[in-house]
Length: 223
Image (cartoon, rainbow, N blue to C red; front, top):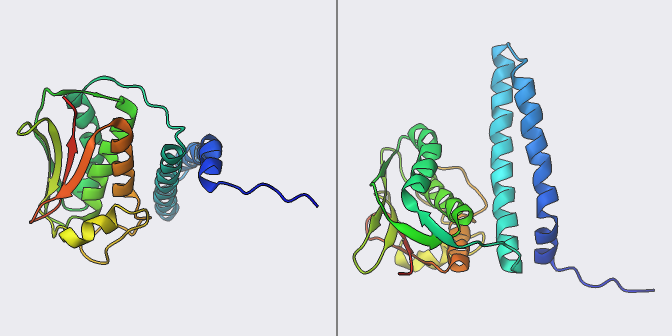
């Protein structure tokens, strides 16, 4: 009897990532078609809840598959000169409704900084970083997004929420690491900051967490 070769789960997820994402795309299409035909308020509400669950599942699957591709070394990176302003405007605009629904406001400080990065991967990193701030800051808090040039070009995403104790910061950077305190967001997979750290490393950007009051995530760009 031939013993099958051991499976590498990271390589497996990386290889089938595209196929695993396709059913979510199809479900979005079918759900949108269904929503256009619904008139009964109760049915509309159920469809909206289904859409919310679908988007949560799709986002979590995307996090897992992106981390797998980064770990397997199959993530494609194309470095180029990327203006931060339009990228930050798009990401904060996409998350503004979610922040408002959570009782928060995103303050974006204008910048003219151009960095050497991959625009697609950087977009994903910024989205995950700001989305994490929304999920874990307290209602009524503010989220600040801007560039600090002291000591080099550093993109800052900061909130004035409860923050994370320095002793616990290593935990939230681990895959599945969660703290059982603070925030109002739903309980996810605990991969948001892990994803940010791994994408930043792949792009050659520094990534740190700090802040005594609230949490400050800093993305350091090379000159």
